[in-house]
Length: 114
Length: 115
Image 1 (spheres, rainbow over the protein chains, first blue to last red):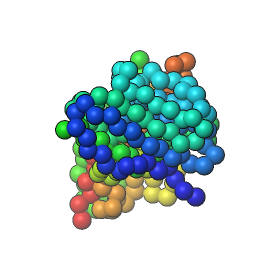
Image 2: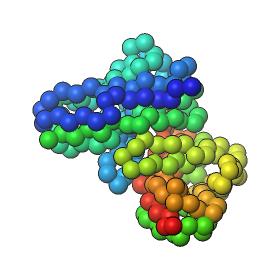
Image 3: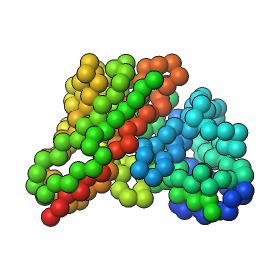
């Protein structure tokens, strides 16, 4: 079956602009996670959805970052007033349910803020 | 606070040698540990998931062990091939109430297998 997909694969934007990153989880997976990975580092947790609700958003760095999952499937990570420090790989993962289950990752979106 | 460490940061071996990759964590109260492979500029591919009640998991040439009491996991890759060249990451889910389901990752070990 289809895995986790993310679009776009690459996004270049200017400082101060607004961007949206999309994640399509594996069909039937109720839990969805967003992570951010800087060069040479492991991914860092941003936010976790169980169904339509954000069960844990403790990793969002500030109020410029926001994520939604209105129908419990596709999720969008939104970044306002982008800064050069937001440049990173943004990874999405899904699992069959919330909790300590195997997570399946998408190919990521490489965001570059110039 | 859980800390996950992978040493060494980089490793180069000749083709055919066995690879041994280490992952250590500071808090032994974990639900599970997962090993991933990441190719340059790509997402993560799941290799093995070990539940806290398990001591090891095997898949083909891969074997991962877990010793919770010492806070360590080891990934063994037998008879390495150039195609095994990648960064290998480990991640744990801790039992603290604020960590339900979210992984904490190490920084990874970058592996190069030379022909």
